[in-house]
Length: 431
Ligand SMILES: *Cc1c(COP(=O)(O)O)cnc(C)c1O
Image 1 (cartoon, helix red, strand yellow):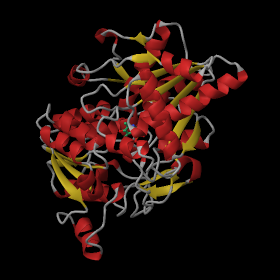
Image 2 (cartoon, helix red, strand yellow):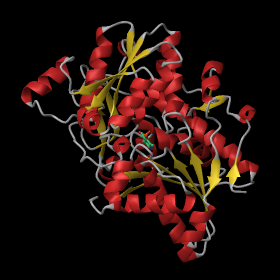
Image 3 (tube, protein in one colour):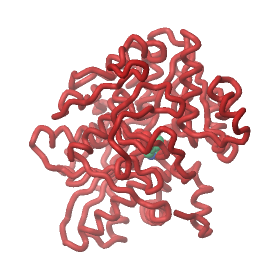
């Protein structure tokens, strides 16, 4: 069977909260003013109470509200596909499966949390949500989600992407989003940066600072983050829970689970429902988070407290970080250009419960083109990182003759990233 479907009624009813099962103590976020654990009261200025509760909850299963499931049903359940042609092309005895999140309206896994976040904010009377976006994957997902709940999205988009990658901006505007190039003259942070350097190209860290500043100003406005935080990882577990049912349907279980990691939610989404079995002691699956060689927070970063943004407006989080003032080189996998890593994913890595690898850009695009030419789907550059790691694992199996089951997350399609493919095909892409 090449493609494993689930019926709509087989969709998970609950998200999986790994905080219930962690075999170690997660260090709390700190208030930078006092260096004491952050009081939830302060965070209420920018997040709804229901999401703050989820952020700290240790309940294992959290119900997916019917209003959220109803919108998930536009594209969920997503298919699980066996990469038969890729296996044949590689000549590997391994079985390669991928969960395809690119069929969502925004083209990636990000709407899984965007819809949930818009829902909880609307329920608590919020009228406007601010956020940041790099190449536009997250901003477009939030704009898509907000339209269903009468919320106005205000998206600070990294200026260089705003200018060079107009299509996702147009997508955001089509869904009713307001998009502002960052750094902008509309915030104190932005103004200060522009005074010092009018040509500043912007970064995710700067855009986060601007979005938070705007949300702090107005009680009807909240802020929304597309990765890193515990509640974001929680919402993404719908991916792994579906994949688990799909694998069970064909009586398989993965030996290796692979996903790319920017802030960690995409990896967590696929991995945590399987990792639950490792933590319980019933399985010993290998987990691999894949990051770009140019922004290697897990494999090269330091495990310490750091800010989530450039200006230092966020709480301090204990995580693997390259430093909050790190400006990653402008690689094409915009969604993986983040200096830090989710505290939960960081903790799991620190404890040796998951693995990480970093891969260079040209090798990633080679894998992406091989995938497009065998399986047909053109992967998002971010997703191509997991394709590359899956191919490497499959080639190892070829050497050893093992027929392992490999599962990876094809987190998005690359149809709005074709200029990157053009550069690769013309031989202009560098590491
Ligand atoms: C944002 C993005 C990622 C990275 O997700 P994180 O949750 O930040 O790790 C991966 N793939 C695609 C297609 C993305 O848009």
